[in-house]
Length: 496
Image (cartoon, helix red, strand yellow):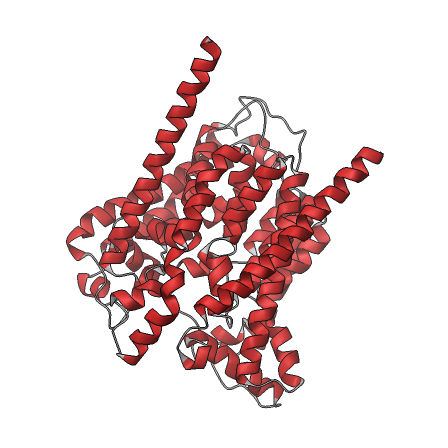
């Protein structure tokens, strides 16, 4: 008992040290990057959120579209600060500080989670570094503070923390709130509650559904995926070249290769989903209590969202499926490249790991962290078909956690952390480069603007995409070389 309490105190010390170090790094990064030189540091969407916060605090009615207004729960602290008298620049500074503190604490919680799951201290620190040293976690919260993305990252880590403690009631509360923070975020707490942790779980090798039900499920999953492919085939070249408006970033000469990559992505999604969902043991491992709590809370929250906001006027959000297909057809595997550049190397490899795991099952021993895999599998269509990586931020901490518990070894995780640091180097020049881009009124496809937009798929220029392909391919080749050398070294050691 004394040893166990000592271990807990040791883990807590590591978590607190991690949070403190993260805050220091956030302070340093904020001085290097400054804030985005658009709308006096608020940014495009951020300027809208900032205006909403100030007008609501002033007691005015916000007459605007429901899309941005539906995310205002993520800015509740900023609204309280505005009621206390903070204005524009003060609110931006407040939001930067709040983002830094929340994400630093979340990073400490994430480290503690990995320690609870049996990772060594060094492996847990390295995996946590892969999360904290990514563009989305370290740069964006201080560079572009008025976004709900940062709150989504915090909720994702909180969801895993609560899931680890088997509290479906708290996950239901997070699912309810997620609806009002960011679209898609509710999938994380909801699916984690449906697939609780079960460290001692085991399955039979032939525990599949009956053939009739298996075929029906496979066809049911295939139908919407086939519909997606049919829609993609009918998209005109002119639409691809003009998305986003005013930019020429699509690689139209590679359209049919891009179409083939889209089909491969759809096939991968179908294989992964059908392979898992046709296993009888999968359905037996789901929690009815978790489903009732979180699905009920999510449905109630969505109903409130529909009836409270006026969806008949104003901006109701982009056509998500159409935009995702345009992004997929812009260049071969562009969504995967964008996710690599925005989140770092660990997300594409986590996707590959989940695909390999789901297609290779059943095994004699069921993965105890099944919920993590289910969440990533649910996000697969967005991750493989949509290059606007910011919108899928909620799955990023889950992906890092999944790969960490799969690899476990600090030596296997170390290349990911090293690559994450290397990918942060351009951030050192972002402040003067973007300032010059604004002064010179350069187009967003210019290399100066691409220091920022080159990591955001829809606005990624052809040059940025090509560089991303080279970087991702090189990293994968290095991983294979390292893995091969370790295998040879291990064989030599056994021989001796």
